[in-house]
Length: 73
Image 1 (cartoon, one colour):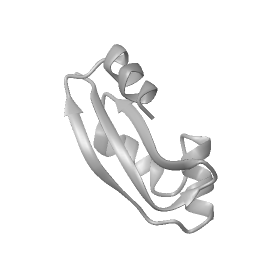
Image 2: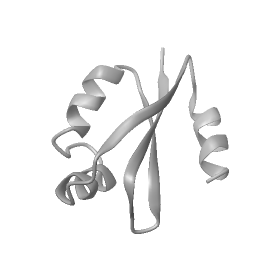
Image 3: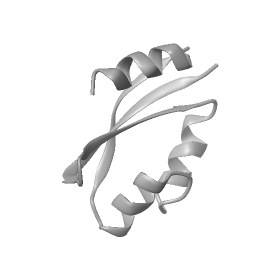
Image 4: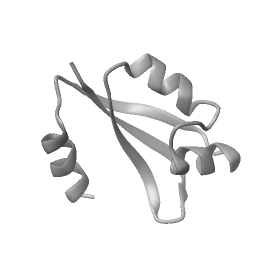
C-alpha cells in the first residue's frame, strides 16, 4: 500500500512551496526527510532551516494519482 503525502514549507524555497511524495512506509520516509536525506529539495529546505509539515495524505495512492496532482502545481 502506498501513501501519497503533501509537505508544505513555511517559507517558499526557490519556486517551491510544497513537496509531494509517495512512500510504502510514510513514517520511515518522514524520518529520512527530517535530517534532509532522501530528496534534494528536502535536503535544501532543511539546510535553509525552513520549517515544514505534512498537510495532507492519501492512502492507497498510486503514481498515476501522484502525477495528476503534480500536474496541478
